Image 1: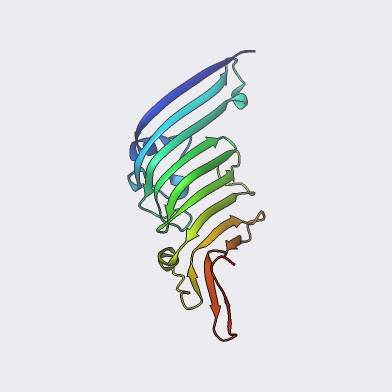
Image 2: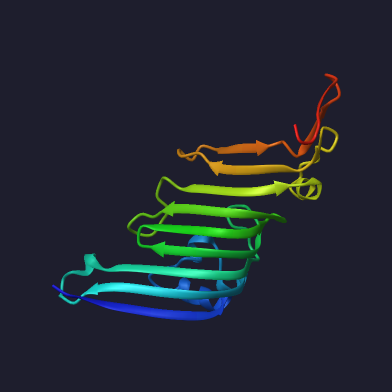
Length: 193
């Protein structure tokens, strides 16, 4: 048996690329309650497909889409968060989506990573993993609604990861560059400790 290989390379505005991503059979944007006009930025996309050249072998089709986006943004929130200035690589196959790169999330720059398994019909399957690494200075904490300046000053490096069973998130905080003060206890920690 032999396979045919198709490769297509596209470059353009994110909303135009979004039109293709939302077409049959992908519906990538509709699954996230987005329309192409919600997107801005630009992308370079490579679509690869390996198709059996024998009749009746439709289940053996393999396809992969790799998009490298620059200055991507969405007018609508994704997963409850606002994204902009994203420089990310998005890889989509029939059984998973992954996103890796940097983005401004709710006004704070972060390194982002997402891995989402997909079911055969393209909907989300269990086992998603999300992670973000960000540096929270005073301005970033305030943008996120964390008004804790009476006990924390300086910079906090944060790693946020989804729990494997999807029941919550794990936060790892590096407080070495932060000053902590607990006035009611008379305790403090200086920067660098």
